Image 1: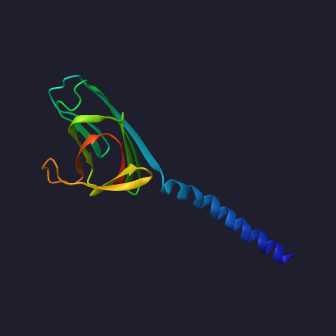
Image 2 (image 1 turned 90 degrees about the vertical axis):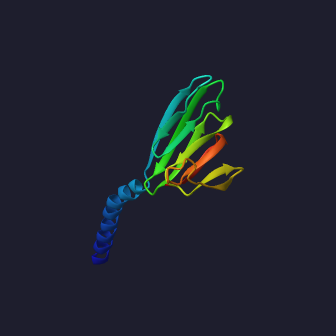
Image 3 (image 1 turned 180 degrees about the vertical axis):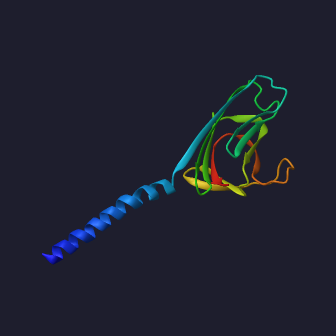
Length: 143
C-alpha cells in the first residue's frame, strides 16, 4: 500500500511539473510575423523604401519601369533568427538595396540548400547587413 501511495505521489508531482513547464517551453520558441506592402508607380523618379522590422528594400528609379507591388513577409524568432519572403518573385532592371538589420551573412534558399551571402556596408552608413540584388527570392539569417 505504501509503495502505491509513493508511486501516485511521484506521478502527481511529475504531472504537475509537466503542466507548469510545458507552456514555458512552448513560449520560448515563439515566432513573430509581420508583413509590409507598397506600390511602386510606373516610371518612378525617386527611391521607394519598404521596411518591416529590421528588414527593408529600396527600389531605385528605373528598377521597376512598369511599377508594381512590393511585399515583405518577415518571420522572426526570439533568438534573432529570421526568414524573409520578398514578393512577387521578379527580376529588376537595376539592382535594389536590401537591408537585413545587422546580419553579417544571410542565406538564400536554392534547390533545398542554403547558399551564404555575405553582407557589407553598401550605402556607406557604417553598418553591415546590406546587399544589392537584381531579383526577389527567399532569404534567412540572423540579426
